[in-house]
Image (tube, rainbow, N blue to C red; front, side, top):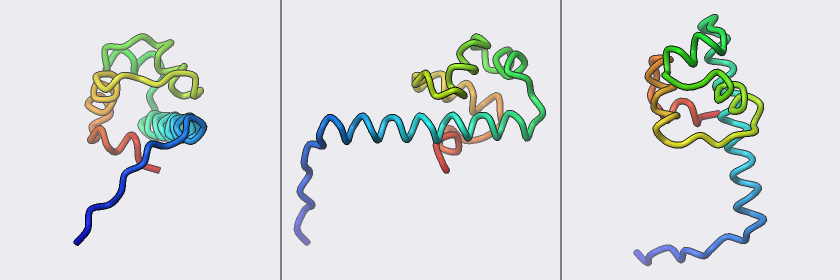
Length: 86
């Protein structure tokens, strides 16, 4: 079986994909936080991050580092990959 050819995506494609994933994360975090009836402040306290970080993620203004994604997922009792699923 031949190997797939991997091509470098264009900068506009990369920017679009990052923006789309940021939106997925924003919506997912908001939905999970709301379903658990957690305020931004309380989730931030549980995860050990700043409340403003939660706000910026939920508003799609911030791409969190992997450690922040892990902290949030642990605080919510889910796998990190679940934060990035539609």
